[in-house]
Length: 69
Image (cartoon, rainbow, N blue to C red; front, side, top):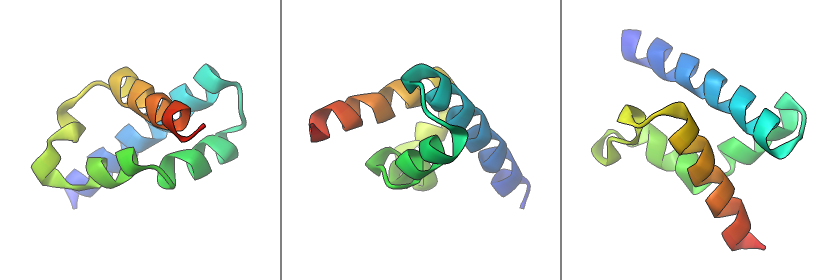
């Protein structure tokens, strides 16, 4: 349960940073993040992505968005 709380806090910080970085609302950033492969990887303990910094993860989401277009 503590790990869930830590992950939720991390995701909250990621959403705020993502919204600021790409200039969208927090709600839109939340949608973008939760529909990303990065989010899937963050929830998978075997990837250890949760150990990376928030800004690194945000950049990963942005790279993923750029690859889609």
